[in-house]
Length: 209
Image (tube, rainbow, N blue to C red; front, side, top):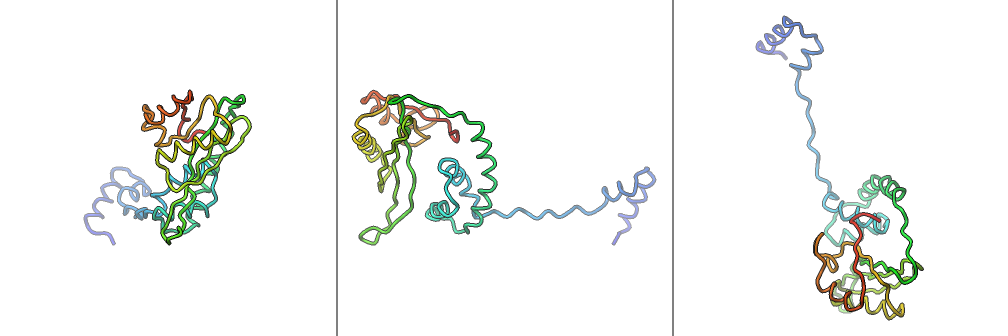
């Protein structure tokens, strides 16, 4: 329904030479834009993207991990989000040059969260996986722990050195808090440990294979 003021506006626009389409655009009602609802997955997308790029975990595995962090949504939401990541992952893979190392030069090290389990006393215990792999041979050391503290991190290194029968010249890490406090500063405890063993401490660029 047009009010008199609206009709006067239309007649004025006609006199000014505007077309019917132009008048409709100038005087028509503004389209209603439904506000975008916040998804239950929004707070976990950065974590899912990081874990998917690191390990290409399945939606079910990712669901187990973020459920322990408070996610209450369905696995279908994770599947839909992963569909948006896979083309990017393929593009990054094509753009990545494989870096080969000679024997004894480099090992790579990281943590992985394995979920929460019931302990002997019925309490819930988080489980983590320490991984060190020799870059040349892909020889692998794995140790399960219930903590990611610095003393446990150091102990896992020593256990890996004992298992391998030595250590490499350098160790490459992800951006772990135990290794790098920020972009410009290494953890001094980690620097002291690697210096004692004559190791070169390196971290790769975030989200870069």
